[in-house]
Image 1: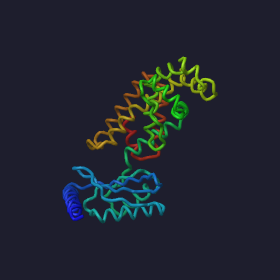
Image 2: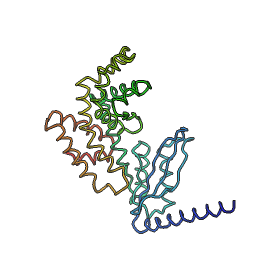
Image 3: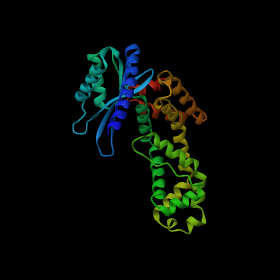
Image 4: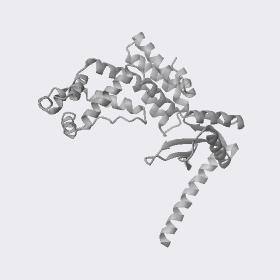
Length: 308
């Protein structure tokens, strides 16, 4: 027991030393406060608080917000207590997602502390752009069709094993509602396997199975062999592929992305234009979707300005 206590103390001292090194950077260069709100599997709402400086990020603590609403007033109080803890003179900005309560709390905070900025998370904004794109035809319907194909195959073990035989043991990406970029990854995985999926539903094994005889199975076959479905998949990938590269840039930790966002969005525009082979009608529709996706978040608009 004594040995365990000494080991724990040693680890605590090591962590304290690392935090002290970060604090030197906060004083010298300033720092950013990052707040990440998420819901755990047990339905608890947790707000993680991190501090970022030139040498990296350090975890400051977390707040359990499960038993109370996180309205703008309460978020502002959390901003305020964190500012006092870190030191008013050390903070450059506070970064959160752009939920309405955070937007209002950020405005209140900038009124109270004019030298500190509130900024919405760039990765979250791009995820919202993804979400808005997939609310619009034909992108909304193509993802629903992809989910239908994935669900029909993955929920039937015999059919799932049969599919793996044709895809060389490759699975299709499971759709998720929490991260809109998963929409792109699901469509991309399905597009890569399109020939194998077509071979599957045209095979003797499929046609002699019970799956070929039920209504849902016939609908899945019609989708997989549909030229229109795959054309819509290509259109969705043409728009979302370049945006996924920007998302990886802003969501990564290898380098600070702020100096690269405008250039990255400009390259995304060029890649989308190249994907449409200069067809102006498709380009205009695409850019309209991107503007619709960015119009409800300020940094989204800032990033989209680089595209026009």
